[in-house]
Length: 129
Image (tube, rainbow, N blue to C red; front, side, top):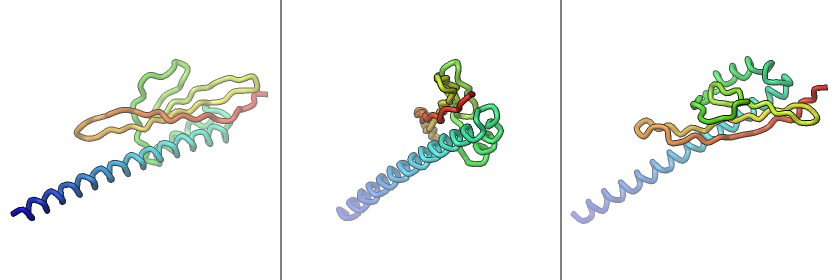
């Protein structure tokens, strides 16, 4: 009887570590998708030299990539936030540049949303003149 209890405990322990490992992989994949989306948005803004011209391409990219569109919490008033990302236009003495923020969202079925982690990046300066 002692070996049966030890075997059941060992199986439970192995299953626990497998669940932890799968959760870690799911979080890592979600985080990498968020970085890839942020970098592609930055590339599109730089290619089209502004957010207004790049917006349709950004929307089509996000629709095709499988990015989970988390609801955005507190952001500044100057930022344009929709579909789980924020774009803020900033001015410098040489021109304007954009700050792009995407969000890693951990939303579990039973627990619900735990938190959103922002991932930010900036474009190069777009010269105005």
